[in-house]
Image 1 (cartoon, helix red, strand yellow):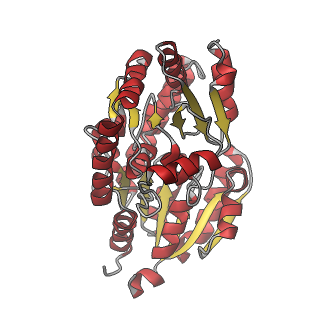
Image 2 (tube, rainbow, N blue to C red; image 1 turned 180 degrees about the vertical axis):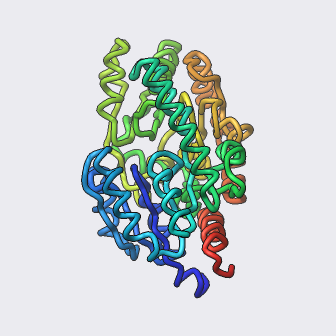
Amino acid sequence: MTAGAERMKVLYFCEGYTDIRFVVGLSEICDLTLAIPSTHLRESGLAARLAESSARVQVDAIEGGRLAFQWRSVAYLFRKLRSFDVVLSQEMGRGSLNATILGKALRVPIVCYLGTSPVEYFHCRRVRGQVGALRGWASESFLASAMRVTGALSSAVVTTGPYLERIAARLAARVVEGYYCGIDTVLFRPVSPEQRACLRKRLEFPAGKFVILFPSRISHEKDPETVLRATAIARDRGLDAVVMNLGGGFQDFLMCARGLGLPDCENWVIGRPAVHPMKDLCEYMQAADVVVQASLAEGGGMSPLEAVACGTPVVATRVGGMALTLPGIAQLVPPGQAAAMADAFQWVNQHTEAARQQALLGRDYVEATWSRSRAFAAIASALKESSGRPS
């Protein structure tokens, strides 16, 4: 780390949930302040994880619900912006709209970090019937407009992977393909069969079962229904499989299974709380027979990359960022096709060595492209250039 990076004062302006790995990585490349809604800070467990980490971060928690946060964050930005060399603003929605407008007025460079595809993600709410057509159209129109404005006013946009880079390239003059927090390939690494057996016992995986791990928070853009239906189909075909959701919304996963009326689901659908991504998540990836990521929309898709870094086979939906990064290193299926996903589960079970070799090709790709060091080097470069500091 250079002296310039040590002295660079950066505000990470975050209006939603964020990953402890991203915050820790940012703290290593700059003098970091995190501004975040107080509810998200507490409810996500980020406050506790930061407290037990060695990261040097000034945390400014902004009180209030969604609307109150917007007004209070504007006042916060107006007071604080000029004390930073550059601001890294999460996504390209309402919060970044406020940040880029104020940044332009106060002559403070704003770099947006695009980790999702906001319009596509919100459209999933319409697909699921969570919002009506009028509200859906209005919200998607607002998000599209906000992205155009933030793209035009920002100093740069850093993205998670190539799919979002293509979206951002239509909106901003300077776009950097980034890799979010990257993959720590020292942590996410293959283990021996003996180590894997010990992990399965310690993590209390069901003995003798084909364990399908779905390590995602259940949100509107994910597709747990297809994962559950695919597992049921595979079981009907004779695969002794269980599916485990590991995430903050695991109770929603269990409710989804019951709501689908899947036979005997209480005995093969498992839900567990989210685990620390810098300590325990890798062990679940290493112990599983296959990791699945099913989505209606997907900007990047970090979980499949973490899995292949462990040499664990992956089945994923051919959508968004996963359609660009996973060909050749995972089994890809069309969105919503439970029978095709069941076929992929059976292929992994019947061709264990070929599936593992495919995943190990993915590890080579991750080490070359999605490494943690490369991820934060890309962010540091964008922040330095935008702030006018030498590289």
